[in-house]
Length: 578
Image (cartoon, rainbow, N blue to C red; front, side, top):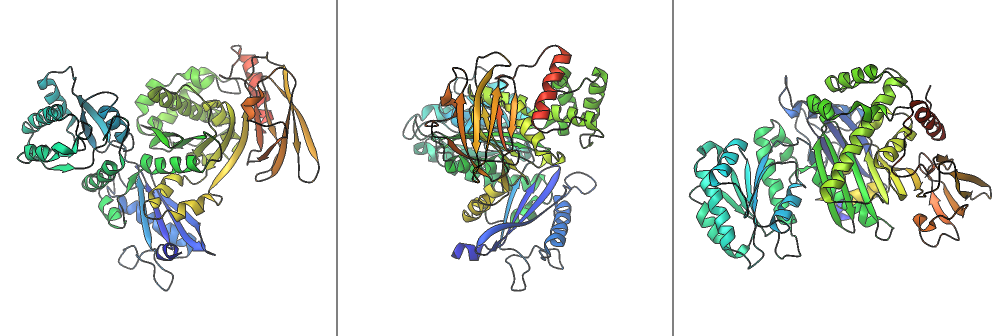
């Protein structure tokens, strides 16, 4: 309870190159609640070139919404809170700004130090410009050219388990120092050593005449164990100092916080692992999708492990790359109506030039939806390829609803996820309505109670309980009959047919009992164990969904037949095509 009193009011800052969003939390009736949110355009680019302008606009909006004064007459954030109710007690800060910091890593072996270095960089927003290894096939002058051309802000060396390899690590350090000696003084990067601690003093001695070196704990102390947290904590501090030099106004926001600001993917990773830990499922796993205007982030966690892939949202930030990587057929194939190729092409081109454009009618809306499906699908495939994932069984899928707020019908969002990810088995779809997860992750560093209590509220909502049925039966074959029993004694029976998607009318938060009756020889274990006596389930915003379309979802090649497919699927999902 003392922590609640000490950190009773909290301001969460979430900022990237496009949007500055604020979250105001406070204790009400002994528990943390989200009181208000506000946002403004980030003032990173001209004419302001300083992120404080956008921040103070968002603060002004938040003050008007909440009625609480957060800044004084001198435009300083009031910390801590005052007896008159003004101010806040804690500020937490998470940010985008992808690839602002360039890093070159150096390690010994694939599968050991190099693997750990990759995992470490995946938890940052730094641009991984190059990787130098013990078996690097390049000549020394080629490595030098790479260092000169990439202009790294940091060089990170790791290698050798504790009391393991040392000569090879020292050789890698010699290569790094050779490159540094050929750089102008103003371009010499900071060096970090996170390898075998038994030679740390020697590494420090070698580097001291040429560059500043910081030493942190070995990220791979044994062949079996990784130890990323100490290095990550240090890199966060160092990254914040570098960002303060690169992004005007960053230093001011940094000065308000207790702990170093966290990049989105790291803050998101904290919450992804936490949500996986909270799962009641045995061997449960979770996929978190953060689709923002700057970044597309995929994070998967299973039994405490974490896999992340963070890429630029090319639609908003790199129109030429978006167009070059987009196959119009991948978009047109998912449209529920026939539209001329030129119309689709013109809209996609227009969207790449003016990404903030809002669809004018249903036709443009469905193209927009298809673009989003394509973005998610491509990045999900990249995520799976990166980590060698070959399964699509996710107990939970959470998507950031910030960018999807334009869709008034939540069933649109549910169908976007099902079409893009195509999960198998039983999946709970969740909607992070405010894009709050990274903020909670940044707050958790100093205040672990707040995220837990906020997750107990309505900030993250169950979108739908989904049963994705696997069967080799032909399209049109009745697969099973399901029976929903409600608490008032009423019931609903529905026949599930191969090739269909069925949304059952279970209200959000409503508890029902579900029974299955197979109509053909079908693997019932895909719905869980011990289901003979029924399953107790909860409805989401979009109810309970049975997806029997198959995996991968087979789309008819004939246009008329494919449009008929979509007509039926959209009607079943209560989505109006008119």
